[in-house]
Length: 140
Image 1 (spheres, one colour):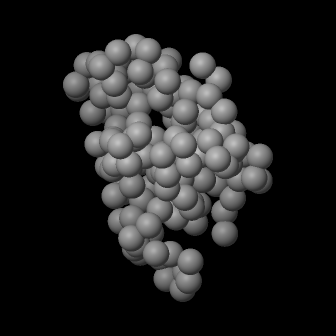
Image 2: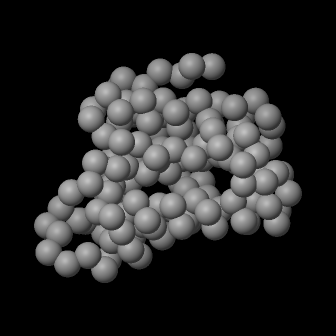
């Protein structure tokens, strides 16, 4: 099995401060995973830097989400795993849900994979509080 793990986490928010918090939390999840020996793939800093366009523009956000979906598909296609950061209310954000559904579609094509449970994330799903118990720290 690959040691790659894709970090699915909320990004979009109504304020710049909320987006900054979302980036910091996604990076906190990635840091936990790295300490545990995984090779995390976390697109949040690149999204925040505008690599995929302006997230506040609906057309550019859509294009960025397509890149995120293709990335998680490639990680899972290579037998990598997925870690999900839920919103504080315990739900997936719309973007996170889109990535997770893409990961499930790809994983459903695996054969002979005992560890795959289509009803749960491939590694861990939890709120920020869950990830903090696992050792995540918010840098902001």
